Length: 157
Image 1 (tube, rainbow, N blue to C red):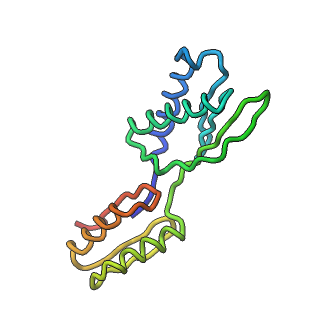
Image 2: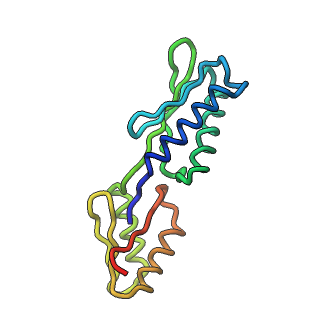
Image 3: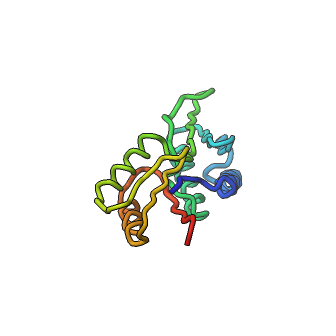
């Protein structure tokens, strides 16, 4: 299993949100902006209320493009030049060591014979002989809230 984000869809969502900020009357002339640089989105607004509206607009666009909101990690609201505020939103890709251990623990707690979990880079590989056991593990992991979007891939069918 992996935790990935489709950067093209994120880029499209940010572009759509930026276009809407430029044309919506409640954002016109406020200096609000949304920009994407690598794996980080920067939101810039004159007030915290406008910033919350930007966050909501961005989340709407991401949901429409089927990008999980669990992939977003919000930074704290910072003061910027001329009394404005900004916030950085980082895109989380890959499974970190702490979450990989949690996934391994969940797989072990299932108590299914022959089911093992191995960490390989930013992925966790769960292997076993019986397809039913693997499907039970997938169902359990989907029910668990790990704070990251999970994608499940099968190497053989």
